[in-house]
Amino acid sequence: MFVLGHFVHRHLIVGGHWHAHSLFIISAKQFKFCDIQSNYTDLSVMGKISVFVLGSISLIIRRYVEQYKEQDLRTSLSELEPDLGLPRIDTYDFIIVGAGTAGCLLAGRLSVFFRVLLLETGGPPPTTVNNPYFFRQYLDDPSINYLFTTRQKYISLESGGIFNFSQGRMMGGSGSHNYNGYARGSPLDYDTSRDIGILINEDKMAYGVTYLRHGIPQIAHASRDVIISAGAILSPLMLMKSGVGPPQILRDANIPIHEALPGVGQNLGDHPLAQLTFEIGNAAAAAAFDAILPESDFEKELIKFHSTPRDGVFAKIRAQQAFLVSSRAKENGEKGWPDILLISTLFPEQNTSQMYFSIALGRPRSRGSVTLNRKAYLSREVNDENLAAIDLGSLADHTDLEVMLEALRMVLKIKETSAFKRLDLKLSSVIPPSCKIYRFDSNNFWKCYITHTTKTFWHYSGTCKMGPKSDPFAVVDSKFRVFGIRALRVVDASVLPMSTGSNTNAPTLLVAEKAACCILRNHLQPNFGDKFCPLDYPWLFKPVVDPHK
Image 1 (cartoon, rainbow, N blue to C red):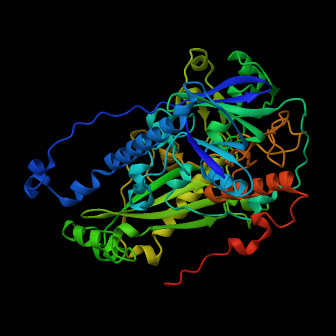
Image 2: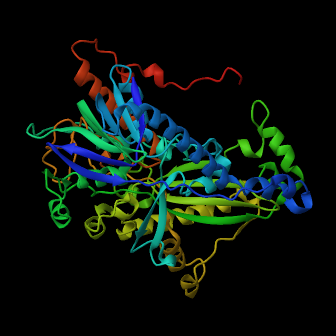
Image 3: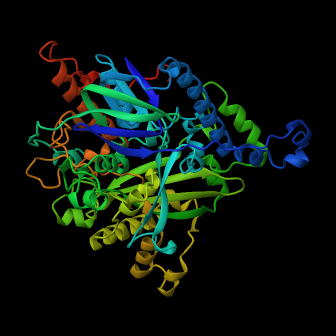
């Protein structure tokens, strides 16, 4: 079995001491309710039906989040009532901190054989996130996301290098609202992570967590392992606040050092993302792609969406991916290993339509870091969004900019092919004023555009790097065990030594499957046979054929 606990404050118990992890406060929003019968029965007041319907998405998300929170509060108070105000120490076989892509999968695998406590700050995903049409609305919604701020030296210069980026805060984490993106990448992405050696210090042990359940202190012990699955931003932050990490950072924050691991928070990988926007000039061609949503057809599209099976504008994903090999990769003898990711996307609009080309660098040489904001920590800041000092490091290696330029020019060539020419695409991207001093379409012009507009693809990895003990920046061994601390593992995208060349959700699922096998083999053998791990049954991973098609 496994128990899901929603929490707002958690501690990791290491070597007999408790260390603050984080305090997440979800404040209840106050809303003024109106008499809808008197306000919205007249279409002249309501205006366009599309605006009336689509303008409410953020409100719907908040309403569901509040409902889930209230339901869980009632359940929590009922369950905790017999404790008479003093926390009951519950013991589980495994405690998993973070119910994102990896944490949810891992909990499912382990709970077949063991008692598992799965802790998550957010609640169930609002149903709205299951509709990719609303991707742009729910991606940055504060009700279901952490919102971090970063200052960069080489990207997003249009805003002084400062921009916000999100990470999902709900069951499934960012995997619950990632536009259904699933790409394994190249087999070569994984070859560098094989045959890694292991060593572990037996003198120290993680044996439990403390956390707040709607503000009520709770303590849980793990008889086998504590597993951190909080993602590439929060997992290293949790380790550092628990005394595991770069020694100077810990000393500056007055955190007792349990294990000096300089690699914690280092090696942050991300896919820098630039975008070109084009107006589709040929309305007939746009209509063939269902790319225009006239106001007169809006209700028809609602009927299609709620039919069985779902159909129409709101039920389709209009994104295509292409993986390409750059000149840099070819020069390095990697002609079969793509390092450029291109995505074309259509979002139906009211009277016109736009096509977006996203340009991402799949295997950047630049690396960043996640560190602890020591000043904020010492001032007793408890919000992880303020405690995480994040440097994506994007385009710090100048050759990454050259690859991005090459990728952008590939898009401009694709635009001129016969298949795309009939769309009559016209560049409509907003050009930063600083770039207008360069001749249009020159290399300097597009380099300026890239450095001023590039942001993140939300593909963070590498901050708790897997590697041999001889690697000074390795944090976990090949069985996901944190060096120097017994019974503590990290299982999420943070363990990937290098960025995979595509979306990171599928590799994260692989990480969790591999970790589940390692843990089950460690704790079940020799009492069970060899084939109790899902990876032992390849047929489980074959695509399921829809009988209705």
